[in-house]
Length: 123
Image (cartoon, rainbow, N blue to C red; front, top):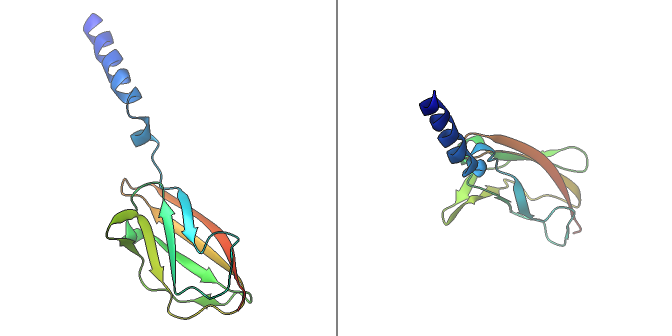
């Protein structure tokens, strides 16, 4: 019985040292263009920075414009120097107006997160 209690106590102690692993998700930290930004020139790429490494094969964005038109994107890729940066090239140039980015990301540990933000192209 004492051995079982020692084993359980050891397991709980080890688990308490790694809560980040247990609760890890890739949360959006920043983006280019930034959320709610007013940009003079339309972007050719979107860069989303996450709190941990993301799996590009299972991550991506949808870009929707003022009349809900969508702009096609290239396949998402990560920055070779930092797998927390998801880079998505646009196949067309966004026009003037407010654009919505809907994103989804899967971290390397398999957890999925999603969200959206907007930016405005002025010219």
